[in-house]
Length: 294
Ligand code: NAD
Ligand code: FES
Figure 1 (cartoon, rainbow, N blue to C red):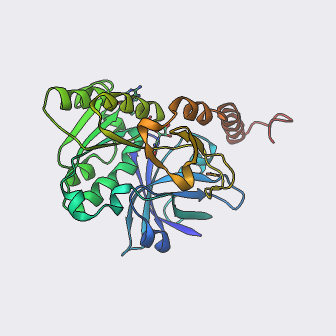
Figure 2: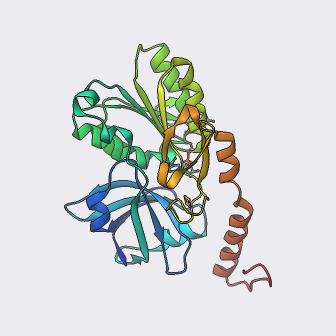
Figure 3: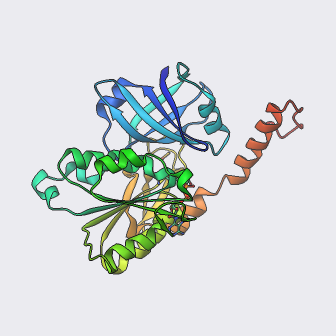
C-alpha cells in the first residue's frame, strides 16, 4: 500500500498528492509517469509525476477528476493509501542523457497546457538544477485554472502566461505566444517541448514546423498494462507503430499522427460517461437499472 502523505487542491477539481513511494522516488527521472490503482480490482490509471524527492521517499502526482476512477482517487485523504503505484514507467526525457557541455548551449522553450503544467515542472526544474534556464509558456482557461505557477517561476528563465479569457497574462492560446516570441521578440529556440491536451500539442507542432524547431510532445494515450504487451497505447509516429508506455511517452511531435491519436483517445468516451452516470446514481442512492451496472 502507498500512503498519501499530503493532499492539496491546486485548482477546481485538480489535486496534488504526495505519495510515500521510496523506490519510485529513487529512480524517477523527468518525463516518466506512474500507473496507479485505487483498490485491488480498480482501473489502472496512468498519471503524471509532478515532482519527486528521493531523500523523503515521496512522489507527487497531479490528478484532475474527469472519470469515476479519478474521482475515487481524489476522494481519498491524507493518511489513506493507494493499492498500487507502479513506476517510474516510460523513457526519461532525451535531455537527461545529453552530455552536460552539449546541453549548456541549448535554448529550450516549454509549452504547458492546463494540467500538462504538472509534467513540465520536473523537466524545467531538472534543467534549472543543471544550470539551464528554459523559457516556459503556460496556457490555461483562466487564472483560476493555473497550477504550479510560483514553483514554475522559481525554476524557469522567463515565464509567459496565456489565458483563454484574458484574466491573467496574454489573452489567447499558447500558440499565439510562440509566434509572438519568435516573430516579434527575436527569440530563437533549439527545442520546444509541449505537454498538454492532445489538440494543443497538435497545434504547437503546426506552429513550430515552419520555423524548423525540433518539437517534442508527451502523449497521454489510453493505457492498460503499461508494459508494451496490450497495445492500448498504440500511436503512429513517422509511419511506424510505437507504444507510448515503453517507447514514449515523448516523441518527435512533427512525426506524430495526432488525428489518429485523438480518435483512439476518445474510443471509450461513451463507456466512461455511462460509468460516471451509474456512479452518480449510486452516490445519490438510486437503484441501478438492470444491465447498466456491469
Ligand atoms: P485546456 O483545455 O484548458 O488547454 C490548456 C491550454 O492549451 C489552453 O489555455 C490553450 O492555450 C492551449 N490550447 C488548447 N487548445 C488549443 C488549440 N486548439 N490550439 C492551440 N492551443 C490550444 O487544458 P486542460 O483542460 O487542463 O487539459 C486537460 C487535458 O490535458 C486532458 O485531456 C488531459 O488528459 C491532458 N493532459 C495531458 C498530459 C500529457 O502528458 N500530455 C498531462 C496531463 C494532462
Ligand atoms: Fe499496453 Fe502500452 S499500455 S502496450
